[in-house]
Image (cartoon, rainbow, N blue to C red; front, side, top):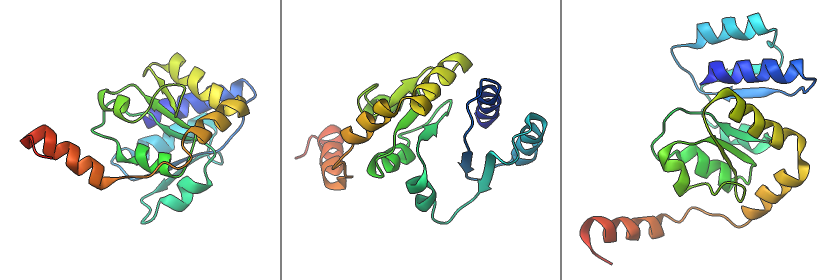
Length: 159
């Protein structure tokens, strides 16, 4: 949904809200996306970083983390954003409910343009909300042992 993100960004600027949006990763639609960015006049503010061996330094420097996917499995990148204690905006895909509790440790929005805009606008303009979401993530860690035991119980009835 990077094309949606470009359209969102363009509309924020029409409404006087300016920021930089960085996209990490590479894909077959890069040329099309670069054209959309150019047409929107966002070349300096919507940046396709491409593949990065270590994306965490970029994530750590970010003010907000957004995942606008139409579908995801578990979405490990969401867990990584939680570890880095970032205000999180995600679209409502089935597995996200395992990771984000709306309004507590992130915002979960529908995948339509207006819901995405409203959620991102909240995060951009409401410092208290961002602080609250970050505070809820203090001390969050990934516990693989706990997850492994849950899987063992689920699949094999073992402890």
